[in-house]
Amino acid sequence: MNTSPVTLFVGPTIWGMDATSWADTGVTLRPPARRGDIDALLPGEPGILAIADGTFHSYPAVGHAEIRTALEKGWQIWGLCSMGAIRAAEMHTLGMRGFGEVFEAYAGDPDLDDDEVALMHSSEPPFRPMSEPMLHIRRFLADLASRHLLTREQEATIVDGLKQRWYADRTMGALKNTLTHRGGLPVPVVQAEMANFDAFRTKQHDLLRFLKEQPWQPTAS
Image 1 (cartoon, rainbow, N blue to C red):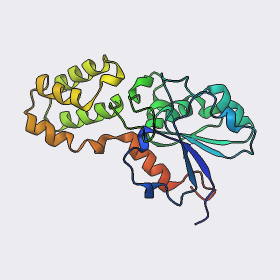
Image 2: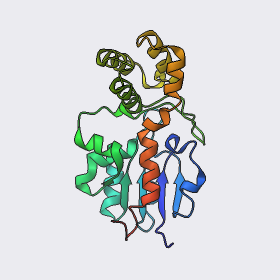
Image 3: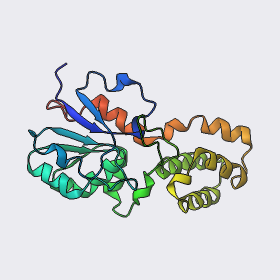
Image 4: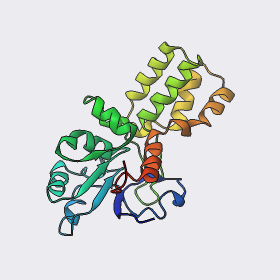
């Protein structure tokens, strides 16, 4: 299969994924995007970039100006999953391309907080996640409420409590404790439900679909 090369800035979103997900896709992996990373590529010939993950607080975030300059120079830039989805929602009118459910959420709600996708992770590869994005937690709790394991009032209380925490404190352990103490769920039930948490990791789902569908290819619909 002929592929167009693409540079993908990614970190914790790809943690735990099988390398076959990006093998033979023409994708080169780079760490989460930070301020200046795109500027550093601009002297080269225009190509294809995809931003999934980016720094939030440890380093200045990838800048709007450098993305705009790259677009003006003919680079094709995609945003998805996390920081990339935020930037794509902010800059799609300038030609940045968005992909996936997280991008659609930000594009559809300009007031959606950046911290909905933020998480703490190790600073070096493989960028192991240490907390869970609020976006994933919301979808997990909504599912519990839809199956009457939580009331809608309990769901709202738990969401509000976790939302008020620093994003790094939104861990699976904290979620488990909250479900047992505020949700009143038995520990075995909580453990069984949390064993299926991967189903609500939208950022990973978007990345897998991006790598599978390869929308950057000229023949992609």
